[in-house]
Length: 108
Image (cartoon, rainbow, N blue to C red; front, side, top):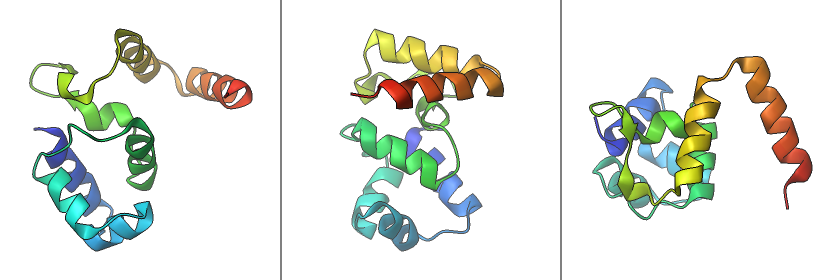
């Protein structure tokens, strides 16, 4: 399943239309439609983060390639970002909260 399919699946699971999702993100229905058809290569990290929040999932769940169990390379993530997401996703809920608190506190 590619990222577009995962976006669509999460959107439908939340009972949202493409218009609903677009409105929640301040984007058009056409943008959501493009993503769901697989045009996600230019998805910015901030948008990915907001998308994950609205869909009540994690960025990792959206970008993880289920077939290869690896991150998709078309997301243009650095090696450090991939490592961080992998480690973060494998952590406990308590550890994730600590990391998020630290990141929020020291965000520049």
